[in-house]
Image (cartoon, rainbow, N blue to C red; front, side, top):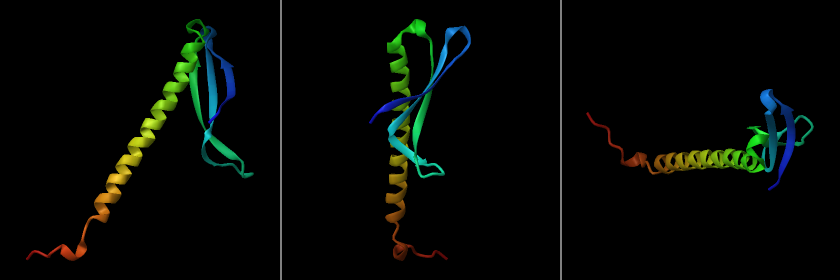
Amino acid sequence: MAINLKAISKRKDNRYSVTVEDTGQVIGRDESGGNIYRTYTVRYNPANGRAALRSSIENLIRAEKAGEQDVFTVESDIKTTVESIDTAAIAVSR
């Protein structure tokens, strides 16, 4: 997995908007068949140092992965529950 710098733009008060792409997470294809990667954008204040920039990017990636895991767990629970229903054992009550 590699993180590539996609864009930098200077904001107010000497802050920056930094966009990176995670080439380890292909989320689709463009019109020409090229990969579209998951991107993350953070605000960076150089006064806070490079470690703060790194931490911000890592925290976004961590949160995204946690969200994906939550979705996987819920979908797994739904599938297991639905597949456990035995329609032959369901009686009609009158």
